[in-house]
Image 1: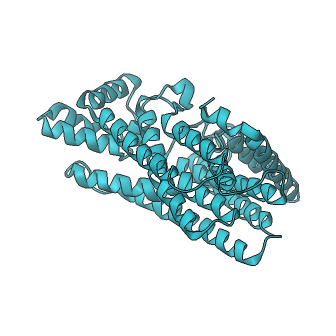
Image 2: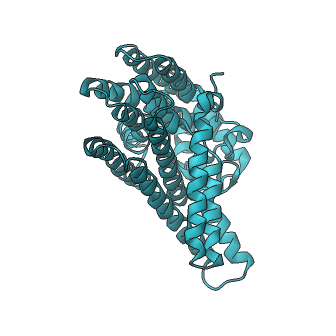
Length: 372
């Protein structure tokens, strides 16, 4: 019962959030219908992106609200669930854009949106460049999901008191700004020289994690839940102390899965992060360990093969095995454990209500222990 899928189903959180998302997509179809039948493909793509996902962000928001005194069955509960849907729409927007920037082939076992639209262009023999068409469509899909996210958030809070709307909006706005900056830092990290100073590479990777993923995956959903419960300032600060290390552990787990995960579970080809050349803590630690051990073979492989899009499966496996042999995955596992322990220690501090406290603890473990 500690899998993310099972936990977000407790008290039908997923079902309620999915119902809100389905309504948003239906409304989108109606709006796009006025622009012609071709525009309905955009609604289809948004629906596909929203059909996957664990709904962890919505669950963190909801159970933080409960842990800070939120009562089920009240009008505010529906507000929290709609804010959770807004978080999921924002996640969809980030994924549309992220897949273009990473030049990813798949998302959750299906072709990434830019690949789908490129194939549409090619199969129809339209004029122009199919790849550019696909990327343009995916960027616009991300923008569209951002519009839907903002709309869902604004309408969820429309009947709430102005002070609450202001406080919640400040969190939501900060989250969106940080993710945008984090995406740029990630792009920048891919362009900067790498491998000359592994300590600096790791510091940069963790900076990207915090800005791009950790805060919006866990910290900001926790804070939004507390704000919607009208929690005190010190309780909201405690959410940040819990959420940031837990969010960092969440992303570090994702980095391990990006190299060593089972494709049938993760929905992405094995070692896809290696082909994409992601500058993660994992590869920075592997480089540091290889250099310390005088392992020039592994060091050379990391320099020359990380980010090579044409690596075949055998070459990816060899590179992944070389990274594993350095002991870097164990380092990352230890770091995840340390971050999680810190988050759980902070979770035990404030006076949180049950079952919210227990559910947050279970969600924390599910986020960092998952295999997909």
